[in-house]
Image (cartoon, rainbow, N blue to C red):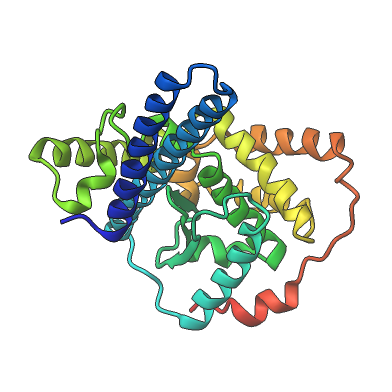
Length: 291
């Protein structure tokens, strides 16, 4: 059974098809009618198709991200602290406003593990570990780490890597329709794609340039939101000597040295090294009390 959104799209295309028929009849009987009308229609038809494709792609991204999030939570349980979770979401959603993907809702959660890491799933699902929060000293550092993960979502790194789409030219054709049942073949392809995403997050890692670019974007986003732009660099320096708790992080990211050098160059080039903006340490300490 079609949902109201699918019915609405079908209705739009029925109207468009009817209009196309009338236009063809008009052109046949009145060949000297201004051609601009039909040209305008073609543009509108193209725009409708692009809009439909974009909406289906977004839906596919969210469906995929939800499943990948379930896999993450299969490895680490959620940290049960409502005040902390609310605070992380307030900071995260505030940062996300500067990220440029208003069509999705970002959600943030804390994972109950002492490893130092953070994860992003397509569709706006962001996770940060208890271990990462323990080593942070202020809200600027928190915002910088969340901004790095947000950048992975806004730049669609996993989406592009796995070619996740909701349209029929995707390897997982009709991915967004999985919720409606789908064929066994579609479900198998879907599961295989999620398996690959899990491998990216925990073993293989994203492309080196994707990570370095996310560091740069996080720095700009943090600065635009009013926080200390050097926060991410400070955080990376602190965790660089903690090999035991950063094993997954170092296995899936460029070296800390390369990331810090990348940020040094970026900060200097954009005249951000000496930009004095708030750390918000007191507010962080008040809200982040890890047991």
